[in-house]
Image: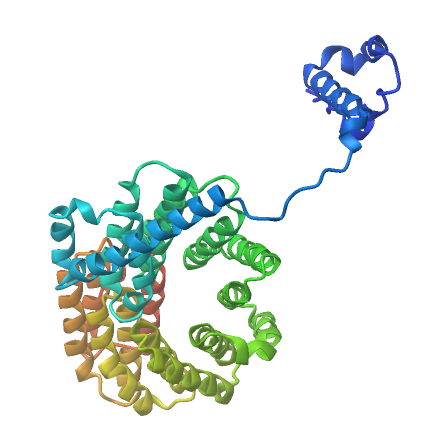
Length: 443
């Protein structure tokens, strides 16, 4: 079936100088109501432009209108009052453990204000990087409060912001499918003409897609978001988007191309916020490690750890420590790697970073085998099994099965480095495929 194309405005403008009836002699115009309406609109505009009043210059007063000033001052005062009250409400809401937050909110319906949503979003970052499980609950509550506000354009923007924050919190703990659902929620409620906000959500979607191994779409979205941020003059978000593009290139084994992205950002290091710079260094270190430039990789991770430490970003500091340990392993410095990995596994467990705990456990198992301490592998795996049993994650059963294999093989003195690598590969795929079964057995 052939689909006939509509005329564009340039073609339709060619009919303006002809009598109205002559247009109907054109076969396409005679049968296309859309092109007819567009031509009528162009005729109306052309007729209007022929009127002299249209071209008369108008003078407008630059003096502010008292009623407009009064309205804007009233809005500002209302927002200031709302924010001041929200400051108190949020302190009371977040007092105590996260288990108490939702019940406390239920007892105080007066806390459901736009100001509270703004304050909760502002508080999210410090939870993301110090207590990720708290961040998940905090952002869930934020979305709940935002959705309960009276319908308005501003309310929709707040709901989208809240869902985007929830998506990132879920991403940190490795809940990729739930994170994508949160991104979809943000997209669904966002006002149509919010281009800047859409760029932010597109970058968030790129990060989730990257974790789900959809690298082509992820890189494309990160580049598009970077272009939008640059167009809006937001330097910080532009750098964040380019860094995200770099990590996607890393994931797809395009290490040299990723290093080029980070090299392009090098002149801007002094202007970057600490967290953005730390992320750039961390991700650049990953690339140098993969191409065998271990000294450069180690230098990047050490600098990133120092910056994360200054900001008390516990989760990202732990990740940087882990990747530094993997650099040491690549160089055969297993004893040094274990000095990092041994306390790190407990830190990952405390932070609720289950995926990182599982992978770090296999790295520790490999290092223990390499230094001739296989007996310690079984006890280490038992601790990890207990963690997953209590965590109750979607993929806990699979994780415990794989860890039990390592434990049994180590206890029997039959565990090998290839066995460990096999389990680690399984763990790397588990968050994307929670139902994936570990089939290998020890006999």
